Every structure is written in C-alpha cells, then in structure tokens.
Length: 83
Image (tube, rainbow, N blue to C red; front, side, top):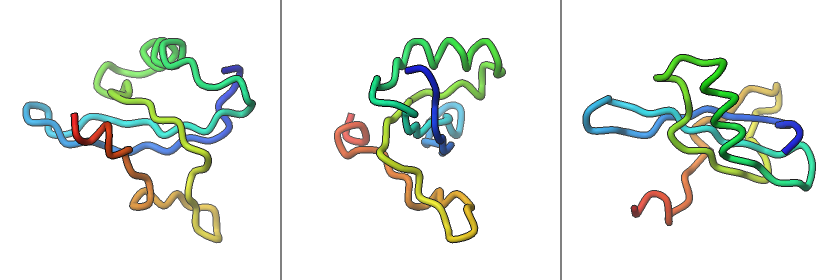
C-alpha cells in the first residue's frame, strides 16, 4: 500500500477497556493494504490507546452530501464480529 485514499474511525466494545479503535481503510491504488506496515505507522504517530485494534479494508467510506463521515454506516464483517 503506497497511500491511504480515505479512512474512517470507529470503536469496538471491549470488556476491560470500554472501547478499542477500528480503522476502515480505502487503498489509494490496487496494491492492497499492508496491515503490518499501517499498524507500525500508527504506532509511531499515535498514543498506544489510539492505535487501531482492527484494520478493515472497504471499497468506499460512506459520506453525506456535504462530505461528513457517516460512522453509523461503517460495519465490521460478520466473520470478524463472530470471533
């Protein structure tokens, strides 16, 4: 992954911590997303509590007509939720 075109943050419930961040990512090109590289970059730039616990590739980030992020439309895949 050379660049991240768009991103959308969410949170997942966690028993001990309350919530953990989730990153929804749209790759800028067809090379895909290198989750390890992205996690390393986040760890270098963010505090530990803000590094995404999950990174989920999506085809697009839902936005309103004025460009605001529609967090309620970002969903974890059922296979991830069931684990």
